[in-house]
Image (cartoon, rainbow, N blue to C red; front, side, top):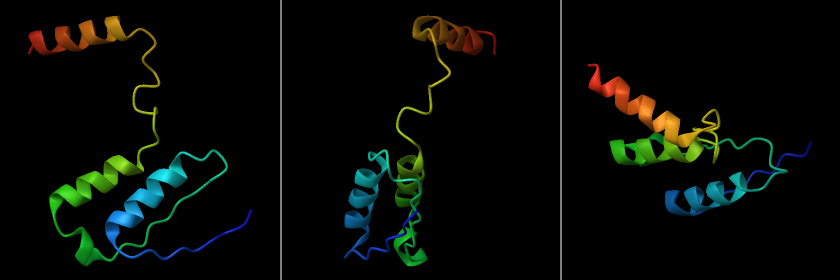
Length: 79
């Protein structure tokens, strides 16, 4: 394995680069070192969390989307 450290100007460019790197199958790990002052609001924090989730991993266990949606609806009707 080889490690590369990259510095970009601004959090927007960092997010764009991170998004691009996550699409590459040979990239094994991404560590972000964004200063706390740049993550001050809730929107930015939530966006970083959502960007850290691997694409396609949230609903990987759903084999039948129609049945899954019905069960979610049924769950809310019983409450």
